Length: 499
Length: 110
Image (cartoon, rainbow over the protein chains, first blue to last red):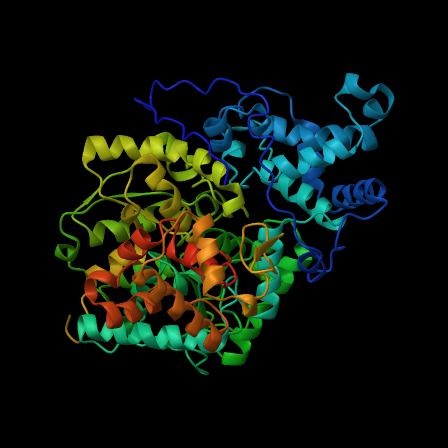
């Protein structure tokens, strides 16, 4: 990994100026391209096809027909500049091509050249340019420096969604054989093994048995981690990182304790041992469909009545917004729970009805803040009230800990910053981007650490947790500050009869 | 992309992970560790050997909890935890230790 400088954190977040422009500062950083085997496993050409220009323009035309939104986004930008200083990658790198408007223009210019009369006639004068090798390389570089977090779209007066443009660009590139290794290799593993990690069933079973032992040793209570149990009421679909990594696994233990105390029968599935759906990151509807249908298949095979999703940001976007179209209808589920639920909805509901109780002393000494995950914050909801995706997690945290404080209002709820590793960028070859892109969140964290003595930052997304664990030490924060929400629940929940 | 060792050429990927786990031996581990500027102690070898054993049985690296539990049994509580593993493998036990042990890189949201 090349050396780079970690940007200094802001002294005062309210008066901090945007970074000085550093043209092409990130032009050197290209994520590893997929090997032919990774591309071919998803039905894409193994490597760049000979007539790639022609095929790319053809694909762009197809996408413009299929997604009317894409054409609207490409047509409607008026260059007002509202988005310019809203992207965490721009704020962390100063590279003007990481301004959302400039990122959009990489595709928009090509769109103008091939699909608009003005672009065809006037070329550069109309901001139009041919798709050349250099342009393609620019796409590959900068569309893999967008985490599709959609913060910019909150500030765009026209609601232009850069994520959708970046997804389209990646789809075009996959179509001509220029895929990204990280995402495509992972999607291939889901098709083959059932999860992003490539964790086979015997290893999953062994890991879960170990967790049962751990919890029994720690609490004396026989909390189960069931796998492939037919006839269970709930199917839990969670990111495979929950089986593998810290602090993710502490969250998984929390879910298990909640189910145990609620007396609800539940199961994991080795067929659908992954909540994530990386196909969204590469913009491929076909792949999304295929990945999502593993969940449908598992639910049918196991005969469950409810589906609950664990702490995973984009999985919840897919579950909340797209799952019915992708893998529905869900008419075989309990009519009281006709759509997949979030584990926080489940826990919050029980907590509100008195079905589970918490002991805050178990988290004594903690001052907790929360990082809203981008896909949960801006692309989903929770419960039956608007803004439930913000209030429900906070209400559960507050019930579990002695003190909660929010970070700066411009960095939470729908204005939350990406952790810096979302959208298929949580890969070591993009570490420089990940570290720099975390700066806006780190600025806000620094403020509450200094002002309120914050000890823990909660996240409800596997990517956020891994990203922060990795990059926070670069900014002088202990990686142990990163906390799963259900880790707090796990420590605070009262177990046993009459608890 | 390959490591050259003892007249043999051992293929690796862009980040130095072995392409074929079967080509690994202790000399290969020492060479990868050297490239990572990581001198290997007995504790490192305990981890490396456990990773190899687990992978042979399950075709995947062990989850962090599985690893820390195994190390607690072998080396005691003080060394059977995530923090100690990061002291041993500063770039992260999952990735750096796997690389040195010749295992594929864990993928996904980790």
